[in-house]
Image (cartoon, rainbow, N blue to C red; front, side, top):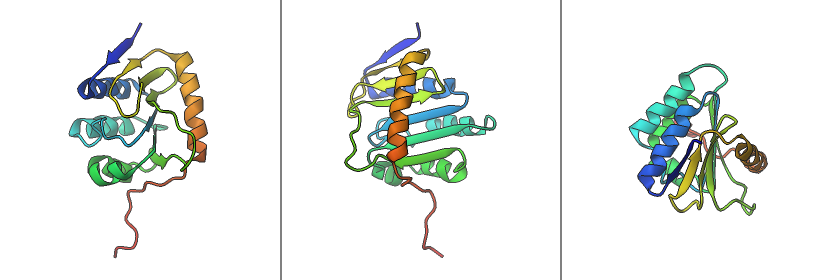
Length: 159
């Protein structure tokens, strides 16, 4: 069994590191705003950049309830979005839509990181949970299809 429970922001970031390292083709993240995942750290930047460069067909999909933190506090992730716009897409959940109260991240078809509450750091990482991953992929797909593409790394209107 590959289950790792985490309780602190540092343990959550370690679990997220493990999930990203386990990903071969696809990473999906659903979060309130990414404020506890270390998404502006140089280590997170390096691991995501490495994933983007590993081959063809890589994909990162990030679905946020509120992208303001990302846009204002995560220049490294915004740089990745600019440099790898063919790999990374970030959307905002549809306003007024029903959203899960928990946050989660998925790598490929079997690795699942689940935070029990989007506003807390407690949760679990299971690197071999294909059954749980199927359900979360379905939930992510439903939210993703209704979510407008709202985060762009390009600045329009400047010349």
